[in-house]
Image (cartoon, rainbow, N blue to C red; front, side):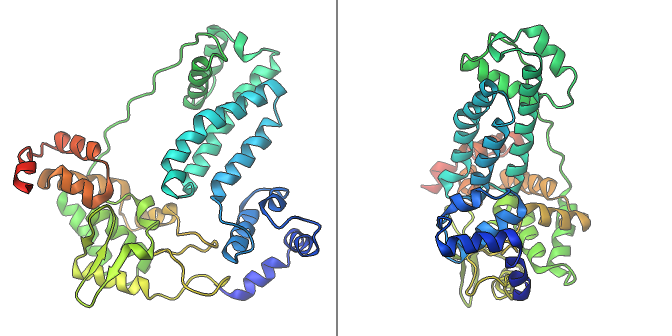
Length: 357
């Protein structure tokens, strides 16, 4: 990134006025000053830039922005409905996000952020419809609910909210549609998987970060979102080998993959907004962030590689050939998940605990 583009960006009126207010004492030097700005990509970049420069304390930016978004949405509703939306977010959505992200010291992924905004938008449309009818959620009957859900394309966010409201005794005993079972994800043949692997190993025309992240998926069954969020301290390089700690036990990489990782570690930094080395293996363009899974997934798709299908195939192959305890330790998944995968693929390692001891 050209540092001059950052300087030009800092001269934008809303950025310049905020920085001037902080410098003169008109605005507090904290996140509340940026909360006053219109939230979006520009403000998000500005916030991350100030965090990276040490001006503002570290926070989980996307989770913070989602909380501000909910407050803004609640303000568009009648007070009673707005209060229910805030309660829904605080007591149902936020704890789940904390368990999945904050408690693991991670911010939301961009995909999760976008998904939650869409989920909340559907709930807001439902509450606005109730407000327009002059009805309270607690007075909503089954016929009226069915009338609404029959008219919308995606009913799961509304059903989710209604289930929470019923459980929280904010609504009557309303029935919702059962969530449709997920279809079993398709897989590819092992030969197809190796062809895709050979492509990423050999094709120098493909961006290095796409090759490395893709190989982590194809060879080591990593979720793409976890692959792009690897940090440099999870990599250990010696003259003899390169290891990556996806889970509890470090993985010794194949020499060809290890060489690509060495090149990725020594690649020119992408950022022009700060000195020093990023802690991410795959540095993003936005300050303090890693590359997005969506970008890598798109580039892989352009190469004819479906990341989700590839990972599913590799997971099945590993489950058939390795004990579930080893898979859990090395790949970084839960033991129950590894056991279930082993049963589904017909792996036979029931005597492994005795062999390991």
